[in-house]
Image (spheres, rainbow, N blue to C red):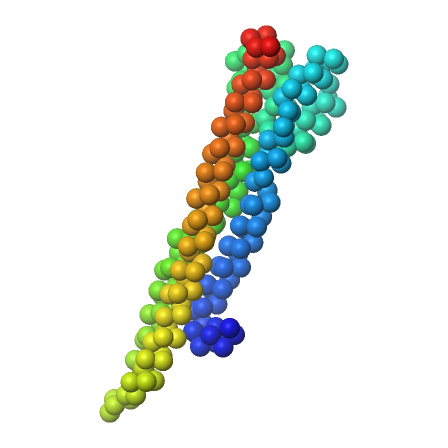
Amino acid sequence: MFAILQAAGWPIWPLLFASIVAVALIIERLITLRRSKILPDGLVDKIVVEMRQSGVTPEMLNRVALSSPLGRVLASGLRNVRSPRDVMKESIEEAGRAVTHDLERFLTTLGTIASISPLMGLFGTVVGMIEIFGSQAPGGSNPQQLAHGISIALYNTGFGLVIAIPSMIFWRHFRSTVDGLVIDMEQQAIRLVELVHGERR
């Protein structure tokens, strides 16, 4: 493997760095975007029961806010529980935008790696081809040596595609996951507002 990296030349090293970053981001997002961590089951019901028993206390607000991203959104609404429905919804929407931004963290970087990896691979191939043809003697060339040099140059393009394809798959998967989580958070937050203002039992 190290021999292939050496043979592919210096353009392979940025691709190798991009692959390490992509793998790290994919692992981090897989751990962070777990549904059980973002949307704990029964959180709204627990909040409503506790609120009806002891009211909204600062300790309760801190505990709910620190429990999960959904908790941050709901805690923002609970801080305005005595305000009109519109004010409560507005505070929830503001917190929801901040939470959505956090859930989308690193996705732009992963998408960029997926987009530029084939171009970086192509650049490496072009550099390799220039070096191959530049090293050929004017009087004649060895076809076997030329074929070997071209195959080495194409390692860059192949490696770029190997990085880009999984990165694009995971980028689209994470985008879809975030969209689904945001919709579910909105539904949970609306349910809390309606329960607090007596429109739902």
